[in-house]
Amino acid sequence: MHYHTGMLARTLILILSSLLLSSCGLMNSGNDFKTNTWEQLWVDGVEALAQARLSDAQNFLRQAERTMAGDPLRRGITLNRLGDTLLGMNLKEEAEKNYRDAVGALDGDGGVLATKEEVSSLSALAMLLVEKGDYKEAEEILKHALALAQKASGNDLDHVKDKQLQFDYANSLKTLGLVYEKTDRAPEAPREYLKASRFMPEPLLQNNATPLLLKVLASQRTQRARTFTTEEKNVNEMIDQWTPLQERAEHAVEQGDFESALPTLRKAYRIARTVNPVNDQSMDSLTVLLKVLNKTGSFSESERLIAENFSHMKANPPTKSIDNALGQMGNTYMCQHNYPQAERMINLRLHKRKILRGPENVHVAETLNDLGKLYMQMGNYPKAQESLNEALKILSVNDRLDDQLAHVVKDELAAIRAHK
Picture 1 (cartoon, rainbow, N blue to C red):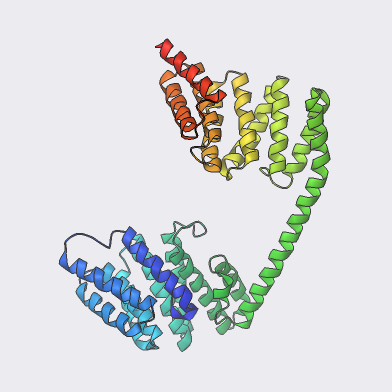
Picture 2: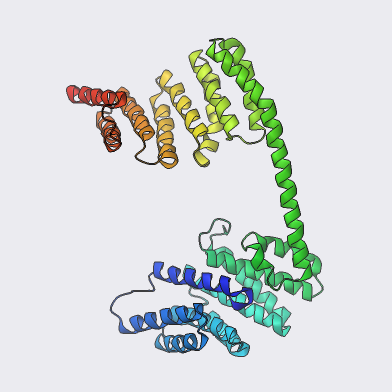
């Protein structure tokens, strides 16, 4: 997050860190005079730093640090920003001292916020040590920073939402690669550079990059392009094989010729899955295949297909083809009066339809009606009434109370009231 990686990155991370402090309860923390004074000075300092008003930032942050001298966490955070400011003023010895003091204040706190700030300070400190040629201490500090970052992310940096932590982790990896280059261990550097590229945009990695790092990035671009070309070729080949089979099977289904449709559908379904188990082609074949199997009473095969696909469909973002397949899965269990499994399918479809189409879409009302009918079959009239009332409310919002679906829902609600 420091000046070495460019003004844009530094400003962005400063803003993110300000939001992080607010969300963790360090800001607006009551009527304590010292805390409120520190908060105002800290915010003024960060704003000045983001605007490159470095003298102002230095004054505000020094005052803030003195105000909270007895609070290690706030003091450490302030010293970290003060180190950034001094680095921007090219006062590197003072910046190094502030980063070391920040680490001393934050180390041992154990909290997630303190750990993230310590990673940031360690990363910046190591970069200054590399500039001085103190590679041994820099390497020790960087490895410590990387371990702390993993700990703060719960060992899942790929999915952590904190961009500051990802950035500082990547910066530490990049600097560690540089240490390896400077200490006659260049073959080890590309590994660190590649890991860094997962968390830092390439333009930032290119800033002050060594020839070896630039070579690694160029090789990675070439590999990505090659992979994309191969994947695109595989998809196109799959579609060329799948399309005539699917069209022939759908025509047979329209003619009621389920016997000839089934083997063609099975083949089309398997071909589509060679590329992706939940692509549109796989889901379209699965939908028609389940429809035919349900009509012919071949429920054991239907259930095998559901078991094969359910977890993939649940884990992936909603699409229209997944929505259609879930509809047939629900039908599979409704046909067998297996209501608990049908409820599972309909509820997942409802969840995905709300995301795909919006919570007040008419298609959501259709699924709520399906759920209401299911609960009526199960004898769970309170839940049925709740689902049907929600469906009717959506139809009202869309000015669709005169539609056939609205009349069906009203009749079902009347039947529930009569049952009472």
